[in-house]
Length: 196
Image 1 (spheres, one colour):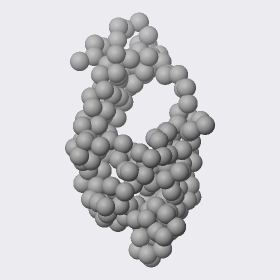
Image 2 (cartoon, rainbow, N blue to C red):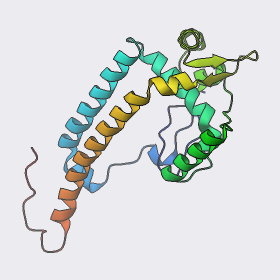
Image 3 (cartoon, helix red, strand yellow):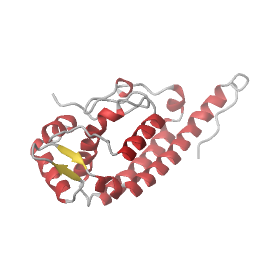
Image 4 (cartoon, rainbow, N blue to C red):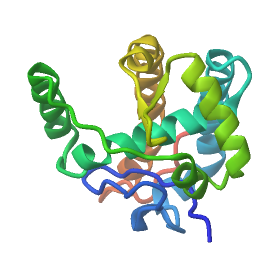
């Protein structure tokens, strides 16, 4: 059985190809239910922006984006699993970059197909394209590794995406914060503020 895509929660890095227990079937808390319609709009806008940017970055091939991301996740899993906090991960990566000892775990087309649910032949075609673009390196054992060129190529993309994510998180926090303020003692009888 093929694994579903995983979602990494801070402090609980997930194994490649496996969903974290924190993300499986969790019901929204009261703040999110209270503003569900506004939340849907904010998140839809974010996802659309990100998908359109990915579409452009990969020449319209979103499956190729998934394959590259999955290879990178498999490669970095050993290091990601050592860090229980994002700042710890950053420090670890910086130290390893400076020492030149950033050891990546190998992966292959079969593992990527299993992790993503993408047919193996499709994965192989995407890998061939990514190798040609020098975003992936394939050794003589058919093991796959993301390249430094890929990291450098997508640095600006990641910076922009992170800024957009922070802005979206701020909007979500505003919705949650409004609910929490209205739920505070002494505010129970006040009507919730209108959204938008």
